[in-house]
Image (cartoon, rainbow, N blue to C red; front, side, top):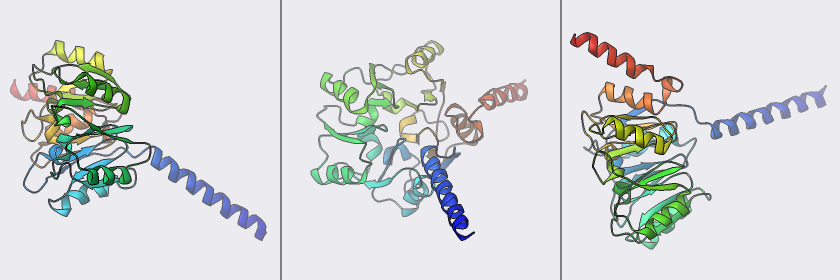
Length: 276
């Protein structure tokens, strides 16, 4: 009987380990979370989020870091960092689950810290690029990258190699800073509110994800600076309205909207009813 009991315990432990592994492989779908860096709602400036890691600028209140840590720490590492001594890690870097690109002004110490802290599967690479705010000039997910039309050919090749993506030179609503004015994951994406329907359809077929035009932080069109998102979580500024959060959760398939995008249609129809 004792032998049978030990076997049963071992079986329970194995099942527990399997469920823990499954949890790490498929993080639970979370709702969008509001937060602020010191007094700034532009949290996309001070943080970067992918499916494999999260970077957070040093400084600010520990509360900002703890918001990310409480949501993400079971699934991806949350790393305090600076780039060339500055805290705006979200605008100077660009990455996905395969790699992270940093500007050539990044110090050796910062590069070493990132390489030691990130998962082994993530390649960290310095880029010699005149347009050094990489987060402003590149937008990417795990499959496709949109880049500023004037970016160097060497940088384009580096993005393709390190991040393992197809690269397209593109503008969004006539804006060359694609990283600032659009944000997309493997689930969906959001673009500048003045993007035409034709452009949205063209970009959507290029990226192979659904897109919507929208704003963040109570009407701001600088989407890259206003929020960060991956396939299962999102963080936005404290000023973000409930309608903006609903649109984000719907298009990025977060929380209760994982299998449905009806909420945008419901809101639109209720707004039309209200106005009429």
